[in-house]
Length: 280
Image (cartoon, rainbow, N blue to C red; front, side, top):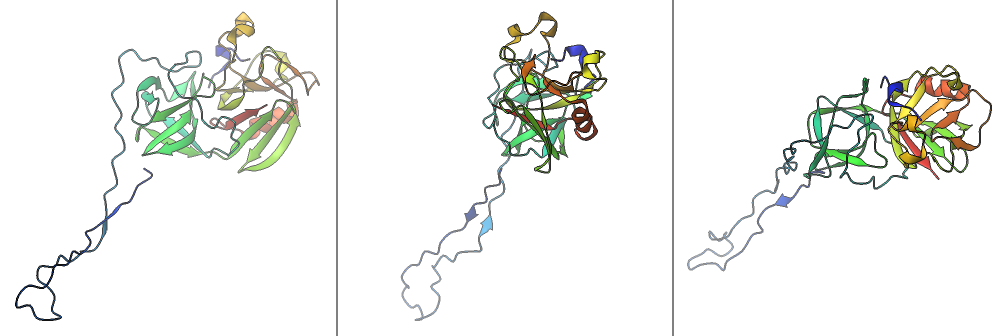
C-alpha cells in the first residue's frame, strides 16, 4: 500500500413536429377540383430545438473536498465495475468544482485539478444529457457526475486488467493486449480491491523493496482499512516492482507486485488517468 507522502501525483432527442392536413367539405360555390380555401395545408416539418441540459443545483455549504486521504459519501456505485470495455477519455476539472450524485442531482463533494500535487485525470464512464460520469479517487467502485463546462478531456489509449485468481496483469493499448505478466496480489486479509479504478500518478519511494523503480499509485483504497498496518491507514493501492523473484502469490497488503522489467515497461508507457480493472 502507498501512504499519502508517497504520491507527488442529450443524447439530443430530435422530435419532428408538424400538423397533418385536416380537410373540410367544399363550401358553396367552390369550383370542382379547386383547392378548398378552408383547408389547412401542412408546412414543412422542422426539428425541435435541442433540450437544455439539466441544470446543476448550487452546492450546499460545508461540502468536503476529495483528496488523497479524504473521501466522500453519497455517490452511486459504478454500475459496470467489472467491465473491461476500454475507457478512452480522461477528464480534468479546470478549477475546484462540485461533483454530483446524478444528472441534475445533489452535489456531494468538490473535485480539484490536482490531488497531492499531481494532475487528477479521471476516466469518463458515461455521458447523459450533456453531463459526464467519471470514476472517483479515494473511494472504491464509485462514480460522480459533472455538468457541462468547467472541465476538459484528453484521449486515453491504455488499459490495465488484473486477474487476481490467475495472478496476471495485462497491459492493453487501443484495446489490444501488449504484454501479460505473472504478478503477486493482496493476501486474503488485504485483498487487492475488485472493480474499476485508475492511475493517479507515479511516485518514488525510498525503500529498496521497490527495486529502485517508481510506483503507479491508483485511485483505489483498501476495502478494509482496519486490516492493514496502522502506518498504512491512509494508503492507496499501487502497482510496483518487487525486489524478490516471487510472483504468483497472494502476499501483499493489497498492491500488485510486478517483476522489475515489467514495471519499467509500464512506467515507460502508462500515464495518469489510465483505467485499471481488477477481476476475481
